[in-house]
Image (cartoon, rainbow, N blue to C red):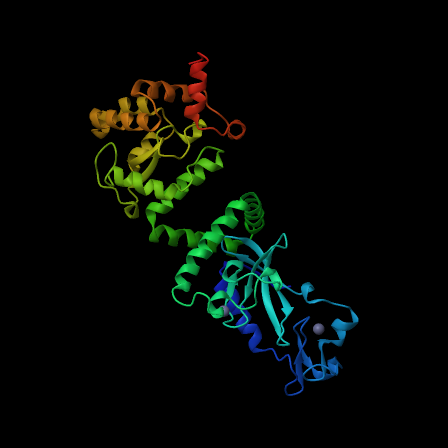
Length: 367
Ligand SMILES: [Zn+2]
Ligand SMILES: [Zn+2]
């Protein structure tokens, strides 16, 4: 079994198949023949006779016949983008050769190769039938069902399908990815490759990169993180006109001077990564603030950095509104978080937003 560890796309898998098939000859040619089970190309004497076959030879080699092997025993493993581990398997096609399909680790049918255009397409790309995977062997596009504009529509379809698949299998995918990374962490080549990918992502879209990092940091501590956060963060940056909330300086993440700052530090086990807790801050101020109480930090450092009280008050008002609180309540809330710090384990036990927990404590008269 071959292991293709890098995350790949359906196009990559198609390219692999094309390469494989270039060496196949399912019908005897120059004394050679490819076995439809083990896919090895062997001298024709390695095959038995079979009268009804096109070339009068058994499509399986003698060895496969003897060991009662089936094609399912021979597959390659891939990591498909957005899905996780998939197995590329083959089945005997009507034309006498083989065709290819993908299943996930639970054996669910994911994709197959169109018998006409040869593309690997997701299940959605075919109309239903009683063929393998419950769909036709020729894709919709080749079928002529949606000739015009179908490709674009199909791209949307695929995205939607991936989204749905990811949503339905979130836990499974997460667990798989965790295991995969744990295994790969000992492989220095893999680690370096990941680092390089991170660097490239950063260069390409520093703002999104920064947002995703903020989200990861919250999730690592079992804290609340807004879904679709990278987009929300872009909206927040727009709301602040791409400027530091406290100094008004134009921020440019590619210059490394911009930071997605958590008003309530993540290390307190509160707040999380959300519009109710995050705002743009110049990097050096973020470093200075660290895990301190934001109100106390501001009072202690405003003169050193020449920060304006008005801007700070405006920020507090903005965040208070995002938390559905008055500025006074919001300040109380931040101090409450500081007094009631939580470990990641405690955060995992109560995954509600901290503001909700605070309001409940307040209602019980505990604040
Ligand atoms: Zn064989
Ligand atoms: Zn097709």
